[in-house]
Image 1 (tube, one colour):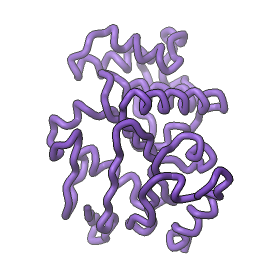
Image 2: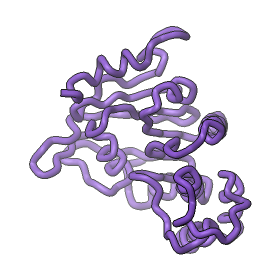
Image 3: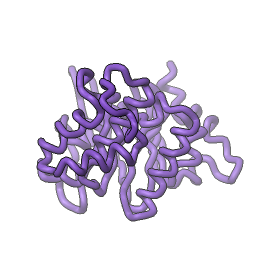
Image 4: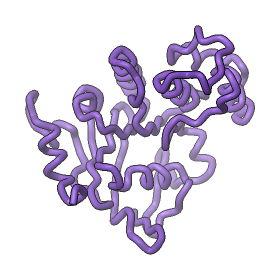
Length: 227
């Protein structure tokens, strides 16, 4: 697909295939086009050329029922509790209140009570964003830097959770700057630089071998974005 914004080509002939049963990492330096690509995948932007396919069908508004997403950082109502924030979404989605309780416990926020979201730590806000994405058990997760703000235990918990989702047949597409964590988390990777795909395929092909240097491979492929 190709996308231009303000007369500048932001994505240039980009192709990416995230498959069920696998975790796919979207990698790139700041400004590489990752957020724009996520916006197109979620129907927030229309491509100048190309198409988006979800669950083997061309993207329509109805495609969103298959997708749970958190992009551009956690978004929540600061004056509401975690449960109240989640109930806003369950109401909009036509889901029972029990679904809010389920995902709140699932991400480790079951004990925060009536604490307002504005008083949450960065990690707690990241957990709340993940809970919002999980409402309704979507088959596809699209997550933008979900590790941000999490402590080491939280990162390990998130990794295990996403790997489990993939093992149960879910599709997980996640962006990250934490290359060490990507090595433990992802099956596949796409590297963007200058709005173009520099690599897309199995993570093992990007940095071969158990001790493959993912950082070196990433920096080599994205060198033009550092200029």
